[in-house]
Length: 105
Image (tube, rainbow, N blue to C red; front, side, top):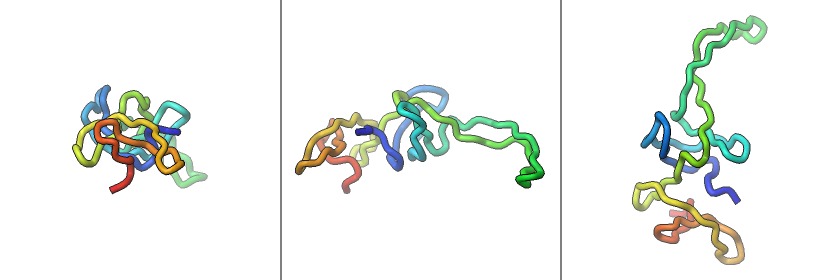
């Protein structure tokens, strides 16, 4: 089971975007995630008249390693670790600090 999933709010722990928050847009492979507004790079694109693409410089959100992000606990507003626990016969993600299920209000 994945500890960080699409739609989770995370905080960046390392790198040039340290302490920035965002929502996970997608997972790339096993160990990378794309976080909204984090690790944005300038990409130079060629014009393509077949696709009606004018070309130029565009901002592109690049993947960041999953070890450099931590999920945010909504109760405390701080980064927290997640563990997998079996509750009512199904596996769920639980915050380490207060044993609340991730995603429940």
